[in-house]
Structure formats: structure tokens, C-alpha cells
Length: 151
Image 1 (cartoon, rainbow, N blue to C red):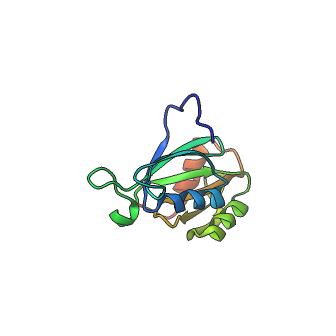
Image 2 (cartoon, rainbow, N blue to C red; image 1 turned 90 degrees about the vertical axis):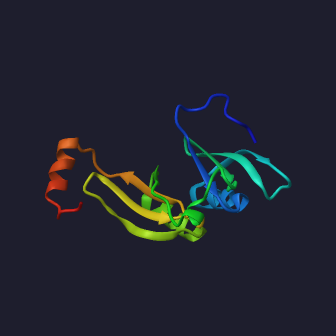
């Protein structure tokens, strides 16, 4: 396993229960590559791990009392990861086959993408999508304005 020599300006750092299982899920669901992991007090307590998903770095660790809590402990997550893929239908099916729960089926969206949402077994939300057409912000706004009221 290799660590990147430089880090991007912004990376996600997530907290999970059972980090070793989470790493295996991300490998199966999203073709993640494990770069490395650091354990504490034995192989089952992952204090820090780094994964690469496509061209993005994601870091993760176990919950640590007084420091970090998982979505399972918090009762959900307000954050959604947006994963751009070549084929949203195939990637969505792969994530579901690996154990993700469907939040929203894959469908064409007004903003020019085909996307669906899943929750991983650790409580994190993933929007899986690919672009179907190139739209300007004005075109997206026109389409959004034609939709029923939301908020």
C-alpha cells in the first residue's frame, strides 16, 4: 500500500463503527483502493486509514469517545458524498449488491445528470451519478423553477 506524496486541498474524513468492515465495503461498492491503515491496540481498531476512490482521497477512522462519532451513533448524517462515475446504473447496482440501502432509485435529473442515492452500512449517504447533458446554470434554474415547490 502506498500513501500519496501530496494531499489534495480538501478531503473527506469520515468516522465509522467497524472501520475494517467499512474499508472492505468501500472496496466492494466503490472500487476503493486502500492506501494504508494505522491501528491502535490491535488490528480491529483502525485509528486512521486512507483510501482512494477514483481520483479522490477519503480518510476514515473508528469512533473515539469525546473526539468523533459515526452517523450510527448520531442517528444519521447531514452530509452526502457525490460520486461521479461512468455509469450510474452499474455503480449503483454494485453498491447495493455490496450492502448499501437504496434511498432513491437511479433516474434522470433536471440538472443534466443520472443519479441515485444509497446509504452505506455505516450510515453515510452516497449520491452516485454520471452526466447526461451539459447545461448552464440558467438552464438548470429554468428547469428547477418549472418543478413543484420544494422548501
